[in-house]
Length: 153
Length: 153
DNA sequence: TGAATATAGATCGTGTACGATCTAATCGCA
DNA sequence: TGCGATTAGATCGTACACGATCTATATTCA
Image 1 (cartoon, rainbow over the protein chains, first blue to last red):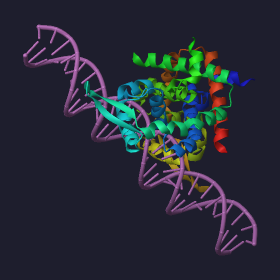
Image 2 (image 1 turned 60 degrees about the horizontal axis):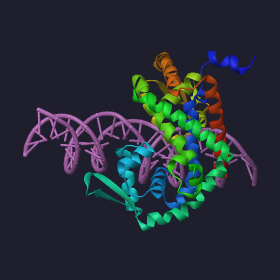
Image 3 (image 1 turned 120 degrees about the horizontal axis):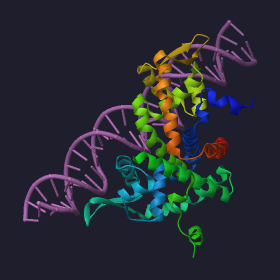
């Protein structure tokens, strides 16, 4: 009897869960990134913030939060660490003192060159063709959007 | 000019990264799970441990760690919380005093009934057909295994 | 057999993550 | 115009997550 017969009636294990596939793959990515980012002195979420700022400098905390789906309670301490590292500045927007604008320092902008190699190493570790990556990324993003829509209500 | 032309030469944003798709989808799952698991008094990683024990009771800390890809430094405090909640017991194995065996209490085993509804709610939020879920899960697991293999070396 | 080694968990320090709440600044509208 | 409501970040408490390290137990082999 094939396992597909037995599975629905037996107790599901974590292996069967789509959420666990995502969860554990996130950890696996982290494991690959860790040694590469250690070279840069960054953690993975810090790296994401830097990527966002390299793509577009001078964003507010809220804009970064919207992009990364992170709350200010997560970002504020993280950004303070990046500031302490001398990679960016945090300054209240004179136009709207509620907002804090993030700007790369020369050191922060310069780190981009050192980070060039990271993408390639990850691409290698992923072990998929460019087309496969695009396809899989699209499927996952669609899943994410479904989940976020469901979480709203 | 289509964006596919502009992208490779312009600065990649977080949106382009496969790792970020995974990372943010993990958070999205958490957002859907949170209210459901609050009913059970569990966090998401705690839920995973319970699923693993519902599938097979009486596992060691190391076995659970292997299944969930988590270290003892993560599991020990988490398991102590589950013990405090009265859902499981932690006892040194008399055969090998280095190992700690985890056993569901009646309360822990009974919680499985209350957790029955969770899977369905998640399935709805995922918004994909059964076949699509199986396919996507397989693709992601393959990705994870590639990453873990790359991380070894 | 007994000392060197290996293994299983536990502990500690650092850094996410988020909900709840707080403060300060801005907005909306009577 | 000025006061209530909204908005942007910051703070606090709880809970992961992991690397480095520690302790206790088990294994190995000279």
